[in-house]
Length: 178
Image (cartoon, rainbow, N blue to C red; front, side, top):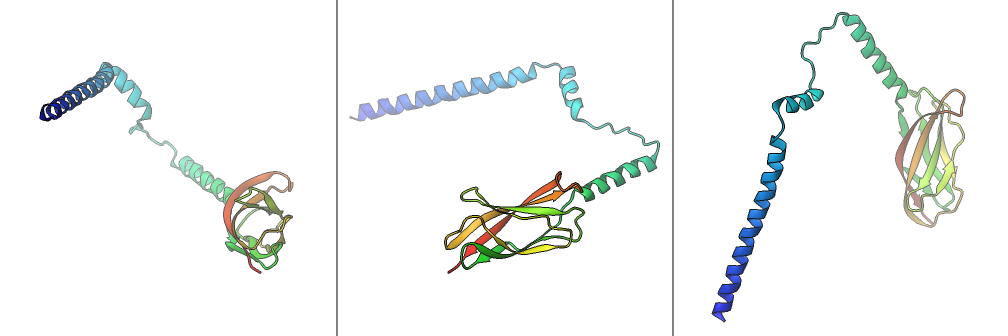
């Protein structure tokens, strides 16, 4: 019995050593395949991601104008959310809430509410002018008593009221109590 245990231990040690040698060989092959590149190849690949430290700006005003334009584009594309994160109902159909189009926004908007568990659209508003808000909504299908997670999609629309300018999603807890 003792001879068998020694033999098994010896085999386990031999197998372990072989596995280490194989792993070492694989690592060596991987490292060698990369080091086979010439220094010029390595420099050519890495130079694609380097910045030129010798850039000289001839017209600082043009750079400032470009930065100002980017800031303006960012401001035009931003949307301020004006909402409470809970909507309450006592009958599962009519909900009280606060979903608004902040006065700082530049576009009219509409909201669409989805139930996250069923992925169903349960409400779609009409246009909400800048500075206005919704204090209640009626869902398209009654919701049982309980608490649910929903998603409100705020959709800003261009002046034609058809082209979507921007969209932002936000969570909304739907709470139905008896």
